[in-house]
Image (cartoon, rainbow, N blue to C red):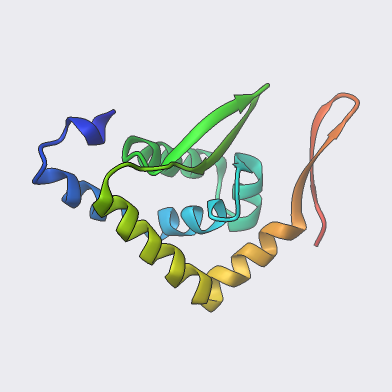
Length: 128
């Protein structure tokens, strides 16, 4: 993992650089609700899939998210981190997200966006 290969002094800088991007914060906010498919993230944030995937890859390199494949779909969730600094920063981030009106609004939008499985595979729908 890239983040683990950094020296001890560089690791906090990489963490904060990772968290300095608004799109990555928005993605972490949605992932705080639980495991989420990339299509739900793109539909909720109204951001194109390549951009979402690029930011998720950055979060994954930093050790902040984990991914698993379900057929052709990728699902992401917050990673459990062993580093006390990372755990402390992420706990504070979760608290801030829970109180922020914009972040709460995006989580409400996420609840209305869903992926439904039909007989031919995955069908993306929006229940707005």
